[in-house]
Image (cartoon, rainbow, N blue to C red; front, side, top):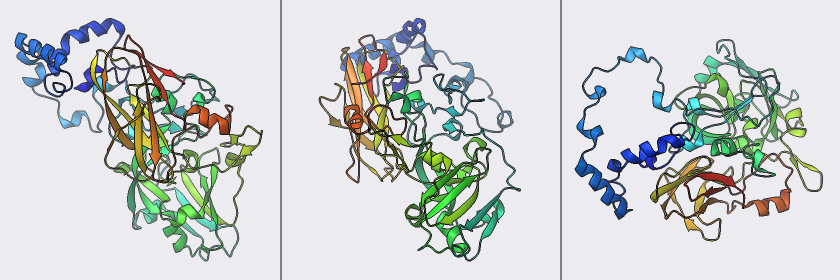
Length: 442
């Protein structure tokens, strides 16, 4: 019911012309949850209740008629009233042949799990729906001494092995990249929407290497190769694999992977930028040095102020963002609101999130909503009572290794302003007196 106070998904609900209509009908929703937070609003709510709300007094058709049968929706779909909450292509990105990125609508999500149908997409050669009965995973060594038994696995053979399920975030290394120089895009969907979080199911890569008799002392890296036309290949250090975290996954959110998310098989590398989570996985090769492929030497590198490139900077550092109120949204009235957002770290668990409503001059701790898991999104909330004056919302996360999310001044001192990747700076949203929220940098 609090969502009636805030235009949480600006492309979904209201135009300016519709605002007055909403103002007229919202009072009856306030008597319960907001009475303690805003006595003035509660008084108005009681007055509306006394007059009688037609939405309560007059039974709608769905309360007096027969609903639709299950066969009408053989695969679950969202409500038609939520149909505009969807992945979106950024109009600011250059197309090469076809769209390659879609952004997750973070402003309209709750909790930490991203619905599979809203998961962000990044493709290097488009997506494919691959026949799982013909798909194979080959595991080999860079020379004959690396593996005693090179093997080829079918999907059936992989799915018969002991599996694990874990929740992890995935973030593209270029997420928030358009913000490096100046404020570029208006909403959190476009500033931070190359981010999602799912429960993934699969077999630990370490298990497959052990089945193949891998020399885990000599083998210091693996090369992961995808089956799409881009020939996507990435080097993964054995230090990550030995922990058992890296998965060869076929399941996501309780079902098989979706085609755009790598069906039937993808690599899960928790805490590492999304390009290393190779989709349509078809080959794993064990070697003793980084492979230096095209996608890790000339792409996904960081340009430093000195002019040198920083390579193999895969860890997604501690980061957070307020998703509501956020850019493009409108607060419809003064009074109580909930600030909510997401925090994450590729190094471990989120330990703390602070929020500010005055552009970073003062900070107070937010509530971390459970579960708080390693290398997973964490939902945070904080109370806010708007007095009608301008405000600037910010969040700052700290992880359990002691890393603190930097502001733009701190980040640019080290990385300048010409980078694309690994922008984990504090995001600012400006609340105007008319209730509009905009993207700003302070």
